[in-house]
Image (cartoon, rainbow, N blue to C red):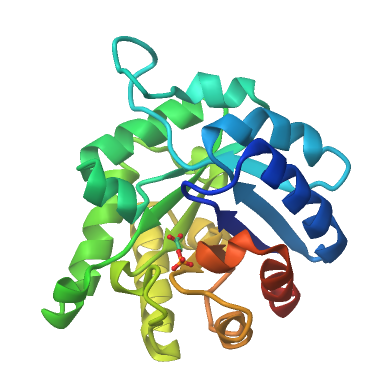
Length: 248
Ligand code: PGA
């Protein structure tokens, strides 16, 4: 199975900057690594055109939980789908924190994405307090059970999980190999309990949080890790290219 490496631009890059990024990134692809990125909404449609030749996937960073209506500033799953983007992140910790997204909202968004024909990267992860209180297992289990509520086993192929410890995002701190390995085990054990061992084995589970060209070498070898979700280092095509190479 190909490794999967995705860059989350967050609120960075214009349409023009995204085009330049795609030009540079296209030279850094590896045949055994699936590469994607999530630009701001404004650059989605153009990014889909820019990436046509390269096979790079384009996704949104978020969708709204309703189909349409009076939600100023929001964007629906079908609007994202119409741009040609093929997937969306759901439940990123910055959305959970700044936009008060609950597990219930995250679940509704997943259902809307699937209905619109978008694949999903479901982001989960514990805060530093939760880790210090030994609650990592409980938090990941809760986020998975609530997030995947009403998702059928035959829909699981459209869903990937990104394990992103909140304390590792944008901080330069990363968990130990053992901690990542444990989180991967917790996630796959929960998928086994909810669905089956086979589906748990096939599930794409990414690690995210301060992934860079150096630490990605070690992270890529951690048992159970299928790839990476990259923020800061994913903005630079050279650095992101090095991360892709480490996963190849
Ligand atoms: P970071 O962000 O790589 O800058 O820590 C990761 C993310 O938020 O997905």
